[in-house]
Image (cartoon, rainbow, N blue to C red):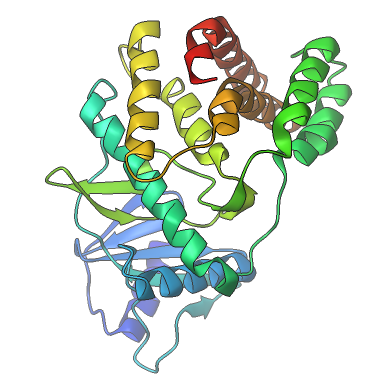
Length: 298
């Protein structure tokens, strides 16, 4: 891949740049540019569109670098390469910094507001967590013969989600909210990245995905129950400092988090990665053990 990148960098007017891989599908050039590699042309085109529209709404997202001939991307060897200006800032890494976690809540709310302003201009997959639970998630768990998660427990969770689902606001969401995709500089939000999974879904999904993800962060010292619950409060406070959540959304937080972990368990069952599937179930159990503590949001 580095050889291919060396070959195509001059198409953007970048000569002899210093390359470093930042994750599996992205490379940094001279601490100034990010080159992201796609196999799916439609996915890349959706990302280009959302970056363009959000940038036009003065939302801090990466600026696309056009080629010297004015193209938005480069196609090479069946892959597609998108170059963007590297945003300032870095990821928050201290899970115990409640002020930083609160800023993540506020950043999610501001992004949701921006999505609402430009949603009509964006054509994204209209997804449903409830339909996913009733569809491929159930199918994967059935194929596993309900070994990783019992059928009765699955049904109870889905029925709970179904009772509240119609009252949950739906809109375009990020769908992959974690510390790595929100950048901060000197304590302030400096940019949002990675909209590859963005879709229409219940708004509270982003909040719950982030909160459940805190329990999956690989750290030497995992969060204690009390620390995680404080983070739950901090995220909600940060979010509601920008725009309110509905009472129905707050009541749905435990159930939606549990559904997300069941989703991950079913996904990893389908991938035959039983260790990660068991890890997801372990996080599910943690969330279930905190249900009474989370009742104050009902």
